[in-house]
Every structure is written in structure tokens, then in C-alpha cells.
Image (cartoon, rainbow, N blue to C red):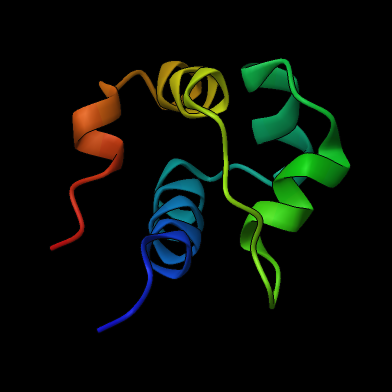
Length: 71
């Protein structure tokens, strides 16, 4: 079973492509540093803080629970 951080990496990438966002655009909308988005989507993703998840979810206009819906 994959660790949550790897599932989250795939989920962010999936949503970003669905919404047509670049990593830079997502970072701007989420009010995060571009490098932070790169790290979350990278080969060895970091473990995000709850406030980071909230910002990313807000950028996608979804709830945190929807962001973490790893189907």
C-alpha cells in the first residue's frame, strides 16, 4: 500500500491537470511558493502541513476531504 504522501502527489497532479493549472499557477492560487508545489509532486514528496492542504484545496475550490479522496 502506498504511503499517503505518494497518493497525495498523484492526486494533486491529477487535479492540476484537470483544472489546466501549471505548478506555478497552482502555487499562485494557493499562495504557496512554487518550489513547495514541486516538492509535493516530486519523486520523494514531502509531508504537507494541514494549512498547506487547506490552501491547495481552496485553489481547486474543493474541500480538504475531496483533496484527500484517493479513489
